[in-house]
Image (cartoon, rainbow, N blue to C red; front, side, top):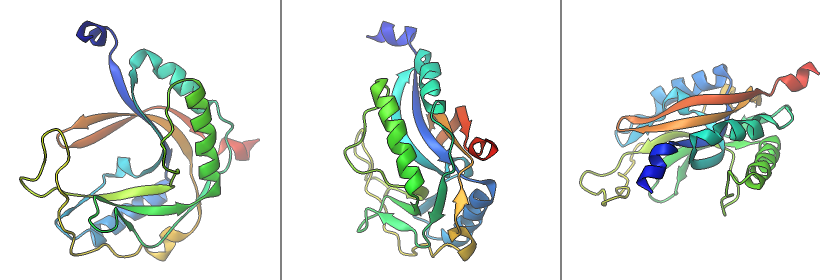
Length: 205
């Protein structure tokens, strides 16, 4: 098995909807103002997106085929409306805070991508229902609580983040879907966009 891995490097992949620059910039400003509790770690700008399908690890040689499936869907308008109040997940002792998005078009696109990628054996759908959301903060673990090979107990969050400003709750169009590769670093995950489909092409037809 080790020799096979050397011959077939693997990549950690996921598919996501990107946010318009205006929305992402607005979320950054909100994070700086509202994520004041030391237990909270703001998600970096490049991580502010709507994940559609987490594909886990695949051989690098499969990336081209996966990208073809992702960019093979028909471009269409995908409107999203962010809800004002960030949600703790899970509610009682949260590990993260997310902003929920109201969007039938996102759910439809995710279902189509899920079917395409599952049929091509690149994706195993999750048991839980798809949820349109943007993760805006993660909760740091308590010192000394990290179990071997697992996650530590999340710290208590005393200062909950406030609501989004009104301008961030206005509907917007997602500009593109993209296939990303993530690299897990001690400082946090880094993302590289490997392929994309411009959803505004639907308006140019």
